[in-house]
Length: 327
Image (cartoon, rainbow, N blue to C red; front, side, top):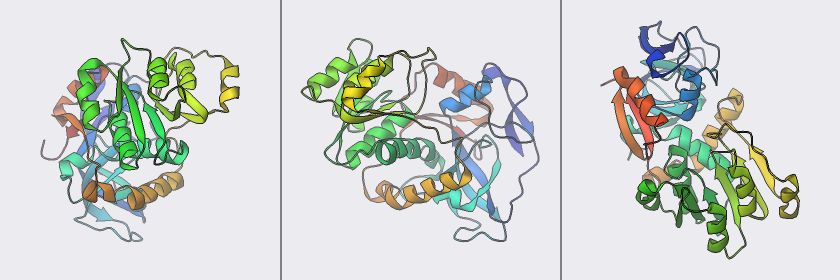
């Protein structure tokens, strides 16, 4: 089968399509013929040699997929050949096929085309886990979401709106309309406005309950300043590589919580538990409510390098997809 392999690290040019052995299912695994995968910042970091993936015979990037089940192990229940599924993995989805534990996948919503469904798992699971499960966001509370036009940002805004919370986002001016379309109550141009000042004005000095941040660096000071007493900052990424410095004492009067989290490094059991809970509590909102994947662009597998270039340019609003079968 075809797969994008990393034989070396560097720029998009190191992404090489090669012929590799097809995966075989273990007793509790299914094999999925992948219709499409999607880009995440972790893929770019892995390509650069800064975020290694799990051990595998060939290093194949890719954290999410949507496709059709073509094989199943002897102990698989609840899913079978021909089913359309989607899910997250530690790596390996830049390929024609992938083997994955059967409880780590979810059914594709009836209202979402299979080719678009790969825009759901990574960003919606990340946003929901960060905002709701770890950040405690509920109806009537407020959130600040950075990089509001990114995949995680658009998903987080939709989730916050769906549960009845208010949400402010930061984004460049060119992407404000995209953010408003997801339901953002306040959109802040981070290039021209201090977001901490904007949040203070928006909340009458009270602050937000949760900050969802993918930037890091010098944002940390202002994230703490933007919190209400008892609030939480959930750090799900670090786009700014500079070491953050902030007054540790600022946490104390806020009685604030600072949480660092990733999905990729979690044990299989945790990923399964998160996936099953998401499937029960959130997935129905794609069929019967306000959630939908936000797609910026899509590329054939042969142009995966161009897809990486678009992500690195920060030009995208929503998810960048890579078509595999049918490309």
